Image (cartoon, rainbow, N blue to C red):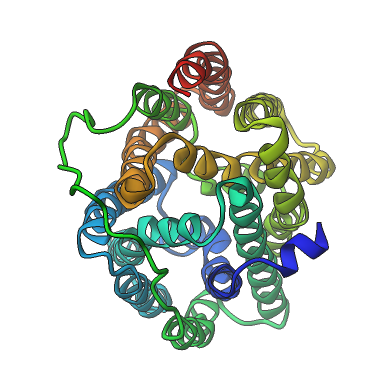
Length: 393
């Protein structure tokens, strides 16, 4: 495993380091946003759902746009540069907002940056390695990403423990953001063979295999029950976890995901993507159901959130590797654009519905809905998508 990681191409390593630094900046802020909304701006779960849903939906549209243009222009690095640059300067502006609408604007700009870079970056990763190493490459990238998500919350927790305000923690996120922008300038486009015939873009996805279209439908269903992770942190705080421990709890989740992402994703190269993704979605369903049933046992949150890290490790890299498996190489940018569009667009109703169910019904009702969506999606992936994929191959 270690030898295989060392042999990964320079582009994969550089993208991994960039993601580590970027997520350190992002996760200095991410776990604190629900606390900032609730304790400083006096906004509730519905406002959080609107903010996250709108921001992610717009980001997803841009992911498709950037993915299509990356395939057409065959220049990926410029989209990656722009994406990291916009996000790096937008995030710290949360420190000067005075209303939840200001938070919405900052998150909106941050997600624009993510939208511009995500699909081109994923295509760059897929094109940098052989098909037999896709799980390893995406798993390594997610591991580095999650290590950054460990560092960020720990830095934030240390700042809060030292008496720094939430606003000042947000402002300090500019430092790793600038480092990310500098590192991104060293990226180079992966040499690609010119396509024999440009693939025409259609909104019906007729240019892609049926198995890929089915996969997107199943992902949409799972995402409908997969609201923003900020609701998990809000739930932890609601159950009585001290404010200073919330970033540490998320750091634990990210640490587990970081340690297991590479071995689990590379396992999908040998055992199959479907088996790993289905297992991860089942873990997710169990976690959501138990979290919704919790009362005041804050000690139980620590092993539960560690289990959530296992879900992230098993699915994040494998889901993207499966996209590359199902589509032609020359259309990978557009395919990743569609993947990110579907996931992001369904985060809007997912987050809005989740916040609505929580506030008008109960946390158990909201988390139970997410658990049910995950179980149905797991069944469809196994018995509907997988047979179509095998037929296509």
